Image (tube, rainbow, N blue to C red; front, side, top):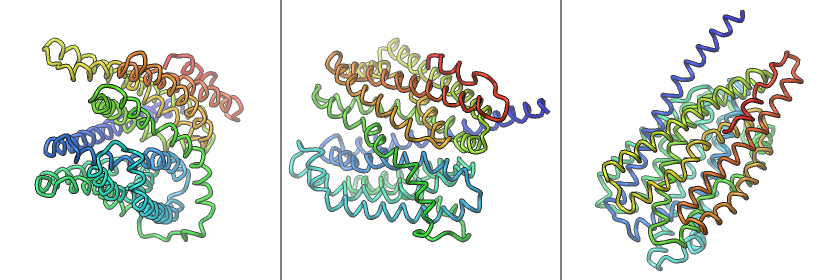
Length: 453
């Protein structure tokens, strides 16, 4: 029996590894296409008032994506994973309809308030650029409706252990979006670029809509237990997400006091680092969340601990490999003397911010392990604590070392978050193992908490 269980675990590990590689590959392709779309837009339109207005016009949408849609996805996958397939089918359509309706109302509100919001976000723009920013904000915020639908539909697919099609839908729509830009950007201009951003959010949702199925669904307003459970899980995350995940606003504020061009080079650096961490998250964390939720649901804490520990090793290895790749690339570039002054700054920022590669994915895994067992308030409080400490670190970093100091401060913030989350999760799961009716294996995660993350 033990030998059979071991063979099953090995088989599941191999399948998980193959799925992780496929997901990471699709995510890498999608991120490369997204970066290519941004590069093509700036290359054709130039870095000037129009592209300033385009990127400033996306700020409100980005805030809602990181502060609302990301936490919503984090709680929807465990919520749906713990239900039967019939229950999932009955819940999915009301969830999708309800979230898109709320998003639509929010879009109308933001469109009306756009002049005030733009004046607060970019007060230094000229009147003409500010007016264009208002127009592009109203266009791009429509993408929030597609983002809401995609969040629900992707969570439904993940709960069914179907991970590749949501990632594939993003790749397909990115290819189509780039084609639309190449055909019409020179004629239509920056407004086409804004509408393409809307398509990049709404298109994937349309491709996934078939996943809702044709079975019976519950009434949107009568299924109060579903909405109550969703709200109970989401509520602790909303404030923390608005506080924790909008750090890019603080970063842009701080870099605005540095030399011209500092904001652009810092934003570019962090896009590269965030893209690499997202690839790790898709390949290592996304496939395992439904399994962790199922294990927690039936009280299989030994297996929960074993799976967490295995994925922590995977994520740590991926971070080290990425860090080694960055150092190899820097060394090669130095040997070939490829660095201009701007690229030299980019190189230094990559190295100073390399802690994001080491600890960003581990942090994501630890937070999702808490979510999988139904606990969202505690990691939210810890993230608020580390973000507050990070604000002080960022301020001191900028004063001490400018951009490099800011990047190093963010690396330290990720390390602090991992240490606190890892130690808390280790104690929590070990306590559950000891009180479980199944004989515990002592110290499943204790070693993980004492090892530097």
